[in-house]
Amino acid sequence: MSKLISIITPSFNSEKYISETIKSVQNQSYSNWELLIVDDASTDTTCLIAERYSKKDTRIQLTKNATNKGAAFCRNLATKLAKGTYIAFLDSDDLWHSNKLEKQINFMNKHQNGVSYTNYLHIDEEGNALAKRIKAMPSLSYKKQLKNNYIGNLTGIYNAEVLGKITAPNLRKRQDWAVWLEAIKCNKKPAIGLQEDLAFYRVHKKSMSSNKTSLLKYNYWFYNKHLGYSKIVSVFYLVQFLWEYFFVRPKYIQKL
Image 1: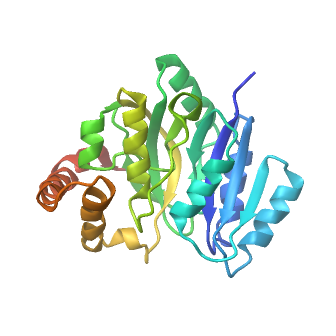
Image 2: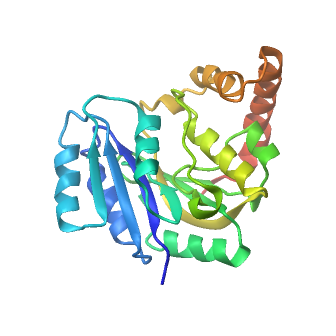
């Protein structure tokens, strides 16, 4: 019998996209999953839409925050509630290919590895292809992941039965980077990358992540506050991050 996969989905004011996101999970060829949606006090109809799906499909569970607490809190709460052997992540505006879970779990089993991720494609707010592919490295070490976040959160899966449940730090941004760095550390060997386009990341015009300059401080905080490095060491790693970002990462970004 296939093992249960827990899918972590934080949501906030996602009424325009959440139906499509949920359907991309329901359409999976791998059917033994639970979808844990934690709504972060949405002010639109996101909760009503998610609740409608949960009433028709018992694999979908909706938890509502009374006040807005941020994505890290939502992911951690869902992780605490998760019952699956494997844990995967899918934000409430992103999408999966219909055979993502099946292919990825088979890939992990074949290689006996507790952490994996895949290629993914960019789409715009309307779901149109943006002709951009982010490629997964075949092998991703802790040292390499420390320099830059190479795992698209919507593509990653880890084996919680082997590694334990991994929670995100209370950072404004870069929580997913911290989770996958810790996953690789607990895995005691590099994560493996499946070279197939199995997820679709929605790019928003007003997305905070689109402003790379403003994220420098979050990268610095990642090293200084989360990892506890000194100011000098944190700046050293920030320089490495920038080198990796501008001169190494582009090798894994393809225009289609």
